[in-house]
Image (tube, rainbow, N blue to C red; front, side):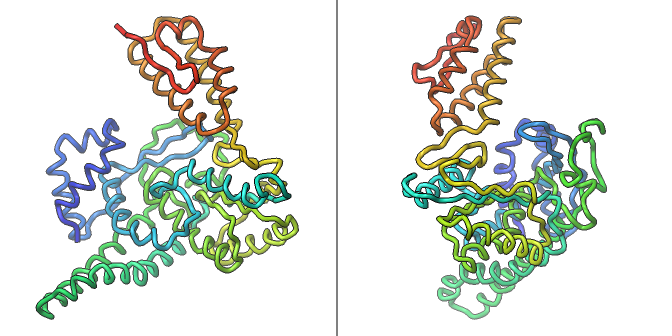
Length: 413
């Protein structure tokens, strides 16, 4: 089922991005004993998800987050590590998020390619249809999700495992060895189904540690919270499994778009999807078909107020960027956040001499924004913002390259 060696490997993988988290530090104090205990629980199939920490984040938009215990995060990695190679065969090329080499920037560039292609680099008319699913994470029916996962595991995942083992079968000297290999495969299928079922049907609202005051939920739409989701619906935002399962759940829709409707220029990032086409009337024709498929096959609702249909020359906002033929600009939110950060750092440096920790934070944050902005046509923006807010106080501690691409620290005492 799961070896202690594999569990150690996935523990270190899980720890990479959570090393300083309180839960990770507590687990690490006696991690060998904790992993041995978890290994026994998993192989005896007695593991159950623990209580999550629940809190509200305000940026980039207000969201409710459920952070699973570190022990459970390791289990999430076990399941996704098992399924991901097979998922990658099932997912289409143009679905993005939680996939290697398919982050936001890759999705932006893919859409920009489609816009340029359809409009022949702005020389002819083309149109962009951007759609959104209403309260996507909170609308996913867990029964339907598990049914689809179970069918996937029983068919495609089983075929994937047997295919991997085919070479081994040919090299076996004795039939008995191959029978043993079959039992191992079937055991693995059962184990993966067990983990998937425990995770999908876990309702984190039943055991939760609140890390934000109740007032923090004021203003959060009802379709954005697990506490107000329909019975049997909703995945917690904040877990690796939720992100991957959310992608998996819409893959059937991806195949409908690509293979039934035969649309070539289509990009999806979680529940944001965009279609580029030469005909505006055809895109209008698609909207009710897409609405019906989502409702009938996935019990999802197309957001009625987030239907964007415009000529390509007018551009489209997508994942923090604004895309037009032959042009990718930084989105308004990215620009606004960059300006606000520089204003805050300017005030801080004016108020007092920044500590070493504050300088490191300023350096990392500013260079992060500059790294994002350099992907777009933004040189004038970077120069204008830095010139205005890179005050005398900040210039005492940092140097700035002439191309406004990177902040550099001066010698700090």
